[in-house]
Length: 518
Image (cartoon, rainbow, N blue to C red; front, side):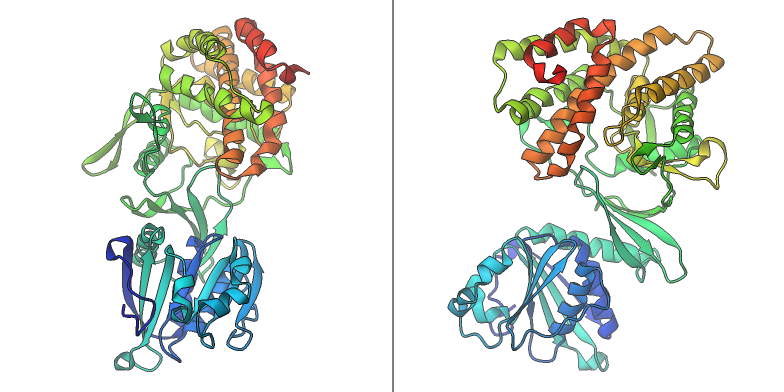
């Protein structure tokens, strides 16, 4: 764009550009709604174009979408210069710089303090161009009378960090319209500990779906033999793994969501909405639903399952093995993150080596066992109760993109030692007994003692890993909400360490983490 029309041009290599025709104001509102889910605190959107092109209408629609309030009064800030709002995503700042003569006046208004941690929407940004951040989304609006009254051309330009986000926004826009969900209301859903995002799509006819935004995982820094943590821990790099497992589970008759539409390269899926059914009530497990969830695992683990699954014609996904390297790098999250969180220090090299040696001895047993599908996050947030279905189909399945080939006890541990919901020891024992009864009924040679031993080892491994993950979410990712779950996970760890097979490991924890047993 030219300086005459808006902000000065920025390095084209750092920008993504998307131009479209908007036939009327309703289309302008819909575009603002499409953009809203991609904003986060600290973002800036600049609104460029001449008088009467619809900048304020666009800003009003975006503010209402971010505030999740379609009736919110959003006056033009032409005379007040700046208007602020509170929204679920954080504070919003709407500024109109038309009457300013330069950035100095903007700073005099306290703009920097007002926009710190806020989403800022700035009309007439060229009046204070030097105050606009390099990472921003610019929305340039122009009237297009040749296309009819109220028609506009809009050019979205994503600079810096907004480049990839704008590409993703465009892909979402295209997918939803191609699949018949373009006019649906979009409701942001609470995310999980990952970088994935979810929205509920609700059409005028009442039908709903889930939009899953799971862009390809960028490689992190190398941590061992030139490989990032995600590769060593066998975490999915793209949405292809989810699609493969989804189809594999559905082929076996389980209630994974139907996939209505997809853009696999962009990491976008439109999924069946399995609904609001939970296996918990408040903060309490619903025992019979937990039992049915354990029954699903018993059924799955009694089957011969393929190790390679189709994604689409010409593309397959092979499940990776949950090998010794993956299991041990996960327990190392405890010395790397949990120990500094609780003690403010790091282990010595000798203590760390002893820790890993004891874990390696135990985990070698685990990887030697015949493998099956391990969904890896088989716990209450990812299990949906479907009362209108029958049998095991009542157990709806989500969040299995990190599935691996591993020991069958792992997913039962995930269920019986739910990190977010306290599962009483008595209920956990009942789940283990119910699972064992079903396995033995199908296979009289099922070895309960060996399974219980593996269950305790993997329970301790998983608890150790989660303590590190939750501390990392606080320190690195600024998600402190997970810290409230630490006492529960610590209790699970103590419970697992009581198994005689873990005596040597328990001794290490008692010596080096005595607070766990205080």
